Amino acid sequence: KEAPKPQPAPAGSKALVVYFSCTGTTKAVAERLAKLVGADLVEITPEKPYTTDDLDWHNKQSRSSLEMNDPKARPACTTRIANIAEYSIIYLGTPIWWGVAPRIINTFLDAHDLSGKAVAPFATSGSSSVNKLASELKKSYPKVVWKAGLLATSSTDAELKAWAEKATK
Ligand SMILES: Cc1cc2nc3c(=O)[nH]c(=O)nc-3n(C[C@H](O)[C@H](O)[C@H](O)COP(=O)(O)O)c2cc1C
Image (cartoon, rainbow, N blue to C red; front, top):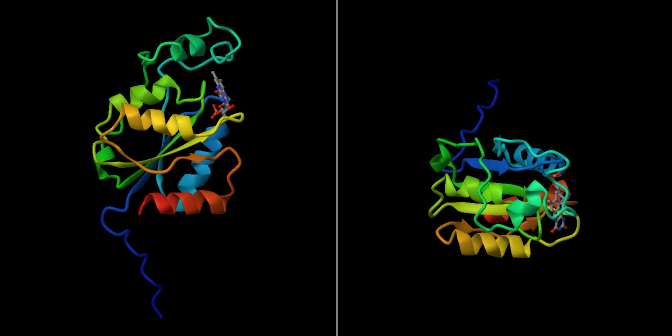
């Protein structure tokens, strides 16, 4: 008997998980999600990596504080996804900084044309909910088809999968 042929993915079903992570929490979720849904995985990498001092939110002069205090800050990121148009769904993972997405997420979004694209944001945080992050992104990038956000700090595989599938509908 012949082995069953692998099913080719239906046209337009390509999924991308793209994420930013400084201390590994979002990265771990992104890796699990990509495996669960069979998505490509790309990291948003800052041109200048964040040091521990950079991430000190108690220090008003730290790099992250200065960036978050300036809505127009766009820290350089080297990530460019040339074939981003090929994806039918993009899962965008990020830590929550000051209640919203780090400015490098804006750098990434500014550099890619995601008009009409389905993008589902997921985030990890100490405690903040994903709502403000999601609504701010929606306001800043109104041409994106934003799907429901997920606070994924302690999401199970089943929760990740259910949320990811819903975003494709
Ligand atoms: C500069 C900075 C600001 C943060 N602001 C918040 C916040 O507003 N609310 C919150 O719950 N957690 C906040 N955190 C905690 C992170 O969201 C949390 O540790 C996240 O899981 C880190 O993800 P990562 O390991 O992928 O970088 C902040 C962390 C940093 C470094």
